[in-house]
Image (cartoon, rainbow, N blue to C red; front, side):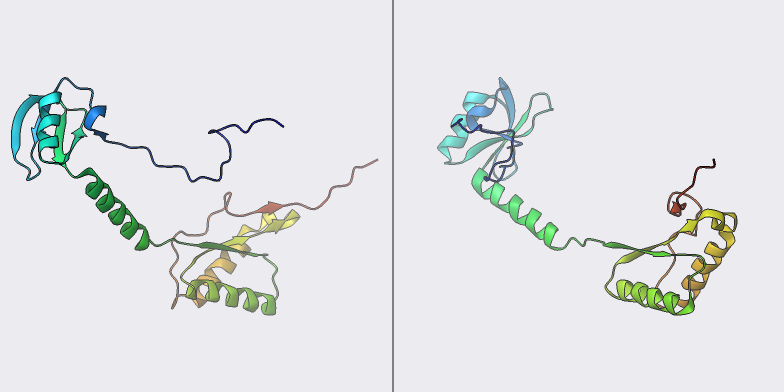
Amino acid sequence: MRPRRRGGGFSREPERPTQTERVNDAIRAQNVRLIDEDGAQLGIKTSDEARKYAYDKNLDLVEVAAQADPPVARVMDYGKYRYEQEQKAKLARKHQTSINVKEIKFRPKIGIHDYNTKKGHVERFLNQRAKVKVTIMFRGRETTHPERGRDLLMRLAEELKEIANVESPPLLDATWSWFSGPTRMRE
Protein backbone atom coordinates (compact mmCIF):
# COMPACT_ATOMS: atom_id res chain seq x y z
CA MET A 1 0.00 0.00 0.00
CA ARG A 2 1.31 3.45 -0.93
CA PRO A 3 1.77 6.03 1.81
CA ARG A 4 -0.63 8.95 1.83
CA ARG A 5 0.63 12.29 0.67
CA ARG A 6 0.28 15.31 2.92
CA GLY A 7 -0.80 18.77 1.78
CA GLY A 8 -1.80 19.77 -1.76
CA GLY A 9 -4.71 17.35 -2.23
CA PHE A 10 -7.98 16.70 -0.53
CA SER A 11 -7.65 16.29 3.20
CA ARG A 12 -10.11 15.88 5.99
CA GLU A 13 -8.48 18.55 8.12
CA PRO A 14 -9.73 22.09 7.57
CA GLU A 15 -7.05 24.36 6.24
CA ARG A 16 -5.73 26.71 8.88
CA PRO A 17 -5.58 30.39 7.99
CA THR A 18 -2.09 31.72 7.53
CA GLN A 19 -0.78 34.12 10.11
CA THR A 20 -0.55 37.64 8.68
CA GLU A 21 1.38 39.33 11.45
CA ARG A 22 4.82 38.34 12.64
CA VAL A 23 4.95 37.68 16.36
CA ASN A 24 7.85 37.66 18.85
CA ASP A 25 10.80 35.70 17.40
CA ALA A 26 9.37 35.78 13.86
CA ILE A 27 10.12 39.51 13.58
CA ARG A 28 13.20 39.74 11.36
CA ALA A 29 13.78 43.49 11.29
CA GLN A 30 16.86 44.87 13.04
CA ASN A 31 15.05 47.92 14.49
CA VAL A 32 11.35 48.50 15.13
CA ARG A 33 9.19 51.46 16.09
CA LEU A 34 7.74 50.29 19.41
CA ILE A 35 4.18 51.06 20.53
CA ASP A 36 3.10 50.29 24.10
CA GLU A 37 -0.09 48.35 24.94
CA ASP A 38 -1.81 51.68 25.71
CA GLY A 39 -0.91 53.08 22.27
CA ALA A 40 1.95 55.32 23.44
CA GLN A 41 4.99 55.43 21.16
CA LEU A 42 8.22 54.39 22.87
CA GLY A 43 10.51 55.23 19.94
CA ILE A 44 12.80 53.17 17.75
CA LYS A 45 14.41 50.21 19.51
CA THR A 46 16.19 47.06 18.44
CA SER A 47 14.06 43.97 18.06
CA ASP A 48 15.75 42.32 21.03
CA GLU A 49 15.04 45.31 23.31
CA ALA A 50 11.41 45.45 22.14
CA ARG A 51 10.99 41.70 22.67
CA LYS A 52 12.48 41.95 26.16
CA TYR A 53 10.15 44.88 26.97
CA ALA A 54 7.12 42.80 25.85
CA TYR A 55 8.26 39.70 27.75
CA ASP A 56 8.76 41.76 30.94
CA LYS A 57 5.09 42.79 30.73
CA ASN A 58 4.03 39.19 29.99
CA LEU A 59 2.75 40.19 26.54
CA ASP A 60 3.66 39.56 22.90
CA LEU A 61 5.46 41.73 20.38
CA VAL A 62 3.44 41.91 17.15
CA GLU A 63 4.59 43.51 13.89
CA VAL A 64 1.58 45.55 12.74
CA ALA A 65 3.08 47.51 9.81
CA ALA A 66 5.84 45.54 8.12
CA GLN A 67 6.07 47.90 5.12
CA ALA A 68 7.00 50.94 7.24
CA ASP A 69 10.61 52.01 7.67
CA PRO A 70 11.39 50.88 10.36
CA PRO A 71 8.54 48.37 10.84
CA VAL A 72 5.99 49.18 13.53
CA ALA A 73 5.68 46.65 16.36
CA ARG A 74 3.07 46.75 19.08
CA VAL A 75 3.05 45.18 22.54
CA MET A 76 -0.22 43.29 23.07
CA ASP A 77 -1.81 40.04 24.17
CA TYR A 78 -1.78 38.31 20.78
CA GLY A 79 -4.18 35.52 21.75
CA LYS A 80 -6.77 38.04 22.91
CA TYR A 81 -6.22 40.10 19.74
CA ARG A 82 -6.76 37.06 17.47
CA TYR A 83 -9.89 36.09 19.41
CA GLU A 84 -11.36 39.59 18.98
CA GLN A 85 -10.55 39.56 15.25
CA GLU A 86 -12.27 36.19 14.83
CA GLN A 87 -15.34 37.44 16.70
CA LYS A 88 -15.54 40.53 14.46
CA ALA A 89 -15.25 38.37 11.33
CA LYS A 90 -17.92 35.99 12.66
CA LEU A 91 -20.28 38.90 13.36
CA ALA A 92 -19.67 40.32 9.88
CA ARG A 93 -20.50 36.94 8.30
CA LYS A 94 -23.63 36.70 10.44
CA HIS A 95 -24.98 40.04 9.21
CA GLN A 96 -24.02 39.41 5.61
CA THR A 97 -26.91 38.74 3.26
CA SER A 98 -26.62 36.53 0.22
CA ILE A 99 -28.68 37.36 -2.83
CA ASN A 100 -30.16 34.46 -4.75
CA VAL A 101 -30.74 34.90 -8.46
CA LYS A 102 -33.47 32.75 -9.92
CA GLU A 103 -34.00 32.41 -13.64
CA ILE A 104 -37.23 31.71 -15.46
CA LYS A 105 -37.59 31.18 -19.19
CA PHE A 106 -40.42 32.24 -21.45
CA ARG A 107 -41.13 31.68 -25.13
CA PRO A 108 -42.52 34.51 -27.29
CA LYS A 109 -45.61 32.46 -28.25
CA ILE A 110 -46.53 31.44 -24.68
CA GLY A 111 -50.14 30.59 -23.88
CA ILE A 112 -52.11 32.68 -21.37
CA HIS A 113 -52.32 29.91 -18.75
CA ASP A 114 -48.62 29.10 -19.04
CA TYR A 115 -47.85 32.81 -18.78
CA ASN A 116 -49.93 33.10 -15.58
CA THR A 117 -48.24 30.03 -14.08
CA LYS A 118 -44.76 31.38 -14.77
CA LYS A 119 -45.78 34.82 -13.54
CA GLY A 120 -46.85 33.13 -10.29
CA HIS A 121 -43.40 31.53 -10.03
CA VAL A 122 -41.78 34.94 -10.49
CA GLU A 123 -44.01 36.41 -7.76
CA ARG A 124 -43.08 33.56 -5.41
CA PHE A 125 -39.35 34.08 -6.07
CA LEU A 126 -39.68 37.81 -5.45
CA ASN A 127 -41.56 37.21 -2.19
CA GLN A 128 -38.68 34.96 -1.12
CA ARG A 129 -36.45 38.05 -1.53
CA ALA A 130 -34.61 36.61 -4.53
CA LYS A 131 -33.73 38.42 -7.72
CA VAL A 132 -35.31 37.05 -10.87
CA LYS A 133 -33.74 36.98 -14.31
CA VAL A 134 -36.32 36.48 -17.06
CA THR A 135 -35.08 34.99 -20.32
CA ILE A 136 -37.01 34.85 -23.57
CA MET A 137 -36.04 31.87 -25.76
CA PHE A 138 -36.37 32.27 -29.49
CA ARG A 139 -36.26 29.39 -31.98
CA GLY A 140 -35.77 29.52 -35.69
CA ARG A 141 -37.73 32.31 -37.38
CA GLU A 142 -38.93 33.71 -34.06
CA THR A 143 -35.64 35.59 -33.95
CA THR A 144 -36.87 37.92 -36.70
CA HIS A 145 -39.43 39.41 -34.25
CA PRO A 146 -37.52 40.39 -31.09
CA GLU A 147 -40.18 43.01 -30.34
CA ARG A 148 -42.55 40.21 -29.28
CA GLY A 149 -40.10 39.18 -26.58
CA ARG A 150 -39.62 42.79 -25.49
CA ASP A 151 -43.41 43.29 -25.31
CA LEU A 152 -43.74 40.14 -23.20
CA LEU A 153 -41.08 41.38 -20.75
CA MET A 154 -42.65 44.82 -20.53
CA ARG A 155 -46.07 43.27 -19.88
CA LEU A 156 -44.59 41.14 -17.08
CA ALA A 157 -42.84 44.18 -15.57
CA GLU A 158 -46.06 46.20 -15.70
CA GLU A 159 -48.05 43.46 -13.95
CA LEU A 160 -45.44 43.02 -11.22
CA LYS A 161 -44.59 46.70 -10.62
CA GLU A 162 -46.10 46.63 -7.09
CA ILE A 163 -43.67 44.01 -5.79
CA ALA A 164 -40.71 44.40 -8.18
CA ASN A 165 -38.65 46.95 -9.99
CA VAL A 166 -36.70 46.44 -13.20
CA GLU A 167 -32.95 46.71 -12.65
CA SER A 168 -31.98 46.58 -16.32
CA PRO A 169 -34.10 47.06 -19.41
CA PRO A 170 -34.63 44.16 -21.83
CA LEU A 171 -31.51 43.58 -23.89
CA LEU A 172 -31.02 41.52 -26.99
CA ASP A 173 -27.72 39.92 -26.06
CA ALA A 174 -26.39 36.85 -24.30
CA THR A 175 -29.15 37.07 -21.67
CA TRP A 176 -31.65 36.09 -24.36
CA SER A 177 -31.12 32.44 -25.18
CA TRP A 178 -31.04 31.48 -28.84
CA PHE A 179 -32.03 27.96 -29.83
CA SER A 180 -32.53 26.50 -33.22
CA GLY A 181 -34.15 23.19 -34.12
CA PRO A 182 -32.37 20.26 -35.73
CA THR A 183 -31.29 20.89 -39.30
CA ARG A 184 -31.59 18.37 -42.10
CA MET A 185 -29.03 18.08 -44.81
CA ARG A 186 -30.30 18.54 -48.35
CA GLU A 187 -29.53 15.83 -50.84
